[in-house]
Image (cartoon, rainbow, N blue to C red; front, side):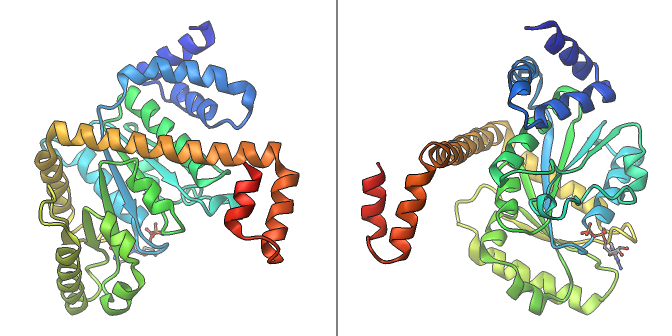
Amino acid sequence: MSSDAQQMQQGVLAGDRRALSKAITLLESQNPAHRSLARELLEGILPFSGKSKRIGISGVPGVGKSTLIEALGMLLLEGNLSQAPQKIAVLAVDPSSSRTGGSILGDKTRMQQLANHSQVFVRPSPAAGSLGGVARRTLECILACEAAGFDLIIVETVGVGQSETAVAQMTDLFMLLTLPNAGDELQGIKRGIMELADLVVVHKADLEFTATQRASAELTAALTLLTPHDAPWRPRVLQASGQKATGLLELWQTCLEYFDTLGTAKLAQKRQNQQQFWFENLLREQLWERFSLEQGVLLELQRSRVGAGEISAFLAVEELF
Ligand code: GDP
């Protein structure tokens, strides 16, 4: 290992936040020249990673993700709970950030208490790239945080495009936040996302009691239908308010119950399956990128011929290969 990589690795393993930030900046770098040092660093920290609980949190903007994460995080760090994490990292996957130039964690006013806490590390979404690329960098960021001793990793995402699938495929437990006005909300929640959820939280439960109850009942019914009989875990619906700090203890206890129910073996299996998912995903993405780069002209030609109805899609692909 080069001395640069070694120095960085030592800083990360010592839990030094500046070293961790630097390491993550390196891992996120799009510059091909940084990639070999990044790979060395990754290899060095890999044996020290994996020992955290990884929780994904999703929900439309405004549902209260940051408020809930802040309230839950503060409770876990200051609430004298048993089995509470020692150090929390909050990461983000926001595919829209590349378009807007902003990022869901970019705003410094979000999670202010948590962000200033000495046992917390908050990192905005890697700014640009394909979802696969952003996901890869977030995954590597998770590994670095784990090596630095963070034992709870929260990955937050907005409900845009495929970002929910991506986050569900890099965390152990996937939590969906929804609002109490269930009737419309339930219509709005795509079936695919409900299928990813291990926990659904009816958030801002302080607002409308009746609506919250109704939403919980409807969501519970929907989840019951969606969950296979032999599933090791039956997804639950909980109610919480980040603002009023209610329902948080039950939320955390349910998370712990989830991890207990799955146990070490099933969790390890789940992570292995996720690695395979990313292997295929990244391979497909890179093959496509390389092909476009090396055979771009031909590709465009075939694309326009298909568009003009001159040739069928299948034949066009066959010809290309
Ligand atoms: P995010 O975009 O999902 O991260 O949502 P925020 O956490 O930024 O919250 C959006 C708005 O909802 C803010 O104005 C919050 O003050 C408000 N809010 C968040 N949590 C709650 C809650 O539990 N109850 C109520 N009544 N309002 C909340």
